Image 1 (cartoon, rainbow, N blue to C red):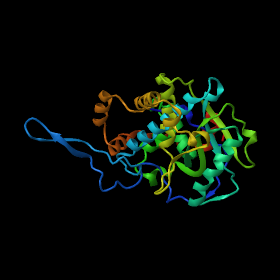
Image 2: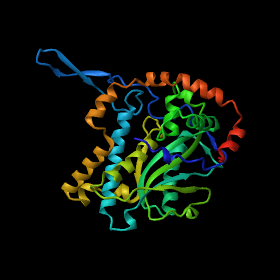
Image 3: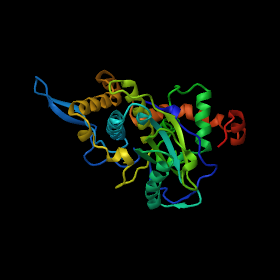
Image 4: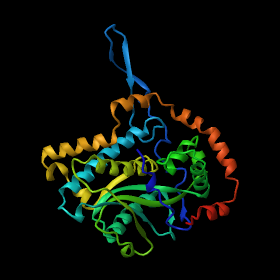
Length: 329
């Protein structure tokens, strides 16, 4: 599941002053809870031997199981958004867009203000025409070093076309401290937003609201529409803000107040939930193959040779790289 095409360049030339580094990190970079175990007894075979099965703590902090938390969150998000879209009248009210809101840069952002500014983001999005949606708080963006490493990897043919920048940088980093070489603090807020047309100029002073893309037309039995929402939701969650006691994703506006069990028939709501689950969860055959994949440490180790070569290639200056790629912030 990927939404590599949803990467966006920095909305601002320079990041604001921030003071939450070391407190707010990303999913998968915390400590595994005590209940977390790789395998757990699930029953007995005909011979009476204990059968072991995969066990997941399902927390966003766990280095091994944070993706399970991510999948659960995406299923819920896609189901809620799909139900809301289904309930709307035919036409532009069914439209859903990926929108990003960047707050004023002349402030100082502490841990507290990072989360409190999310409420301001709701207001900025509504001013730009958004009726509601699901938001993901992002505390960091990639820096020039991370951008150059990713760009070089793509040019050298070391990455699949659907490999996003954040996925690549996560996999080549040993831990969060290592990842900080490729990122810098800059708060912004992604939204899967119910909106007919985004009017960025109507946003409050100092805010930048930008539409990234429009999602596929929705039909309750069209898996393509569900997968389209799921891919973006999953990708934004992989580098959302992670802090104990705070929610990485939230709902606002009409989507927050919408209750599918009350607005839809039981049959339709169940159907939408099943389609959302199907769009996110991998088939059983593929899930078995997934168990045989290398561990997180193994995947990172496999990248070591490639990364060393890329870092050597990236000794060119950032300014030269920018001119060659034609990219400017």
